[in-house]
Image (cartoon, rainbow, N blue to C red; front, side, top):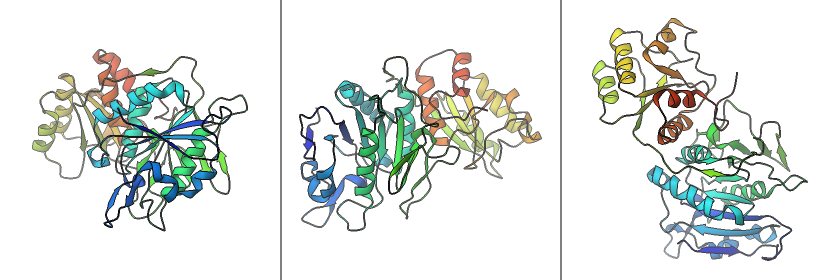
Length: 357
């Protein structure tokens, strides 16, 4: 069992009037610091106030749970999402909110997956990370971490959570986790949410867009731990061959495919291509149409080049991101519903990942 470390802050460890936050460190740059040999290594969170002295002034109770083996986000797997969901479920009743420190490369995938797995979420889960390690002078780790803590602790006057959903804070913006994608590797504004405005913005003060934040659920938290990773992504490009398409769609055991199409959901009208899609769908493979464009949405039938897709069994993903689409496939397939029920869930807005028309 990972050990929990209590960070010394301005709040007394026994003060029940302030928010209690659990930080879960999974890995990534945000939790790295330079050791005595001058090499980057996971920091000791018992010494985090030395690297982030601002934490001493935080008016909340903060505890940190570090995974036994930090994971580079490029190696994150569905098994890690299941572990993370289980940890949140285990400590859910003991804390007012959670901050997940995560590597940036697949943070959007993890935030999307957790949004589906944690049904009826009534507490904040804020993902954040950094482009520069905490031990560097020009780091974004301190600002991202401290602001994420503040968001996780934010409450309405009635005591309910200000942001009761899985979100992602980076640089100056709080975004719905399943609406984000990483768009930058060299600058601090690493993430964007193109089809949904920020839930909050951090300037001199935090300004919340309450109209966009998901409402408190009326049912109790339900944690889903079954994911089906027999899925893939097929990104279309001019010149893609029948051999390539068939090799991807005929993978043994394949259950779902995110089809990354052009523009508003357009694809080739070649008979071999449409036949390949239909044959895959007839074998039970769910096909979800997602645009390669960062903004806008899929509108199957708007152009001739997408009119034939529904007949081939292709479902419209509307304005869902690829990251949210592939994790949604894993989640919905893990529910083990019938083919028709699965298709119905895939086109529904489950956790705010799709903008209703």
